[in-house]
Length: 161
Image (cartoon, rainbow, N blue to C red; front, side):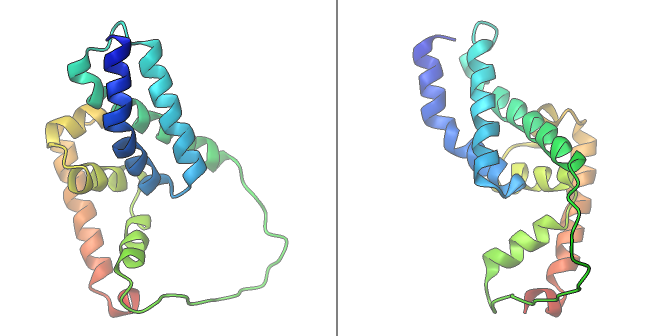
């Protein structure tokens, strides 16, 4: 990959990769770090990466970086100093975006990534399999289960109202 092709990849794909990672991490600075690292790795391996495969390469690297980040964050456990149970219900009525984000947050990391790659980014089952290192049949099964879980969450009135 040439420097010009790399710059073209940054221009074309940076927004898509960022949106995908941000949807999963739900933290802007962490998402920016993951995307930056993905592009840095592509630059370091530009000799081996062909321009035709650059989009798939970026999403694969970003996905794995995101998983590594999530694992690292899970290891850090913060203790609450207060044992008070405060229940605050702050669900604005008819706020579809918030409801969908809440529904997605109920999914496992893998399920959420698969839903976003398929339904949000429009990847094929085969491409998703390459990105996530799952077989095509695993992608279909996990995606089907995730959609059932989303449906079950979204049909409950207490979750939507």
